[in-house]
Length: 486
Image 1 (spheres, rainbow, N blue to C red):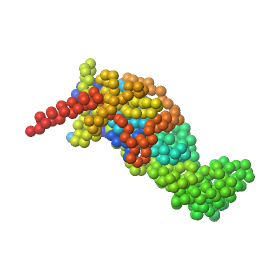
Image 2: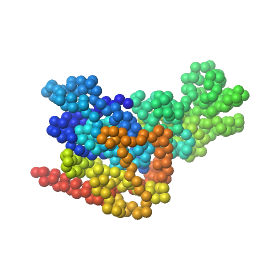
Image 3: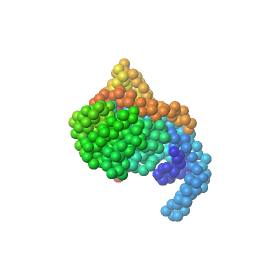
Image 4: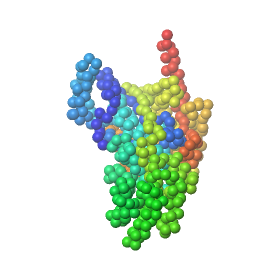
């Protein structure tokens, strides 16, 4: 991945210049990356994007041509936007940050820090845009894939949205994130090469249309690729197409090969799959797969299954890789604490007229409590002020609601070290292990939390002491504002 720090918004650079110009570039700060609402109206989210983040961080360098470009930027007066001394500083800059993150494939919830950045404020500021870009999209797609795979109820889901994806980079990223979320394979050959994802695919309608009739097309394909025969049967008449596939399947069997299955790409998929299953079973092909496609998503899949459809493999493209019903996660990156070199930490909170947009202060972590293997609640806490013993969470949306975590419950913190003083300390798992983690994580949550619609609300709250300090900071800040109002 291109690690150019120019993958950023201009205001990150102007703020960095301001920190440098005012002598505050080495002040230590803590930033947290988090989101405020789970996507798709669901009850959970799958963390994804840490591996691309690590790749970008490891390649982070201001190259000579980056600096030459920045030197051409001008302010409103036509003079250079940045001094030459600042550009020299950027050219020598090497990250010295401590970064912690929640591993990919972890089930996460609103306001929890997915990534925590601690170190020189100038450096932390320069990371904001790229980290958000990488985490927002990947997390969104992994979550969509998890929902789709849940709707498929254990049947394999093929991701094949390359042609509809948001650009080449978006396509490859989506294939990886979809695999993290649970998709078994992809049609994207580059993603298969880059990440080791199994690739699948056979032929399109154009293959059938290039011959005089459908049977001839199937026979030609079986002759060319006898070990990869999934026939697309809806070019003309779907059930006739199934019969033609059966005819060719019998000939394949005589040659020592087995027809893999058929694909339905239009029409009433529930009814057609039932009728196709009858034809295939009666002809002696009970193991032949029925693959369905055609703008599928989790709700369509759930509907087909509820109607008794006999689809056994699901091909999902557009609505997965574009996160069709919610195009953005809405993750944010907020300053939560700051201190001068050698000084004490000063917590920071961002106010808003909307309660959901008021940020949490401190150096945050997330402690997950489990009982008998099931997650029962997450507490966001401040490492500067550990809980005195008993852990009590307070609902950030309703301070009158609290929950005491059982003393006998097991617990662990979700954030793990990734960088220390700019150096990588994180053991980077294989993609297959990240995908397995997603499934293990989902298995540890109550089924109600995973419902597609109107899910149960999983308990997440602020540690009682952190909630009190946040309230005090809000009151202090609002008091100062009121004093300053004429």
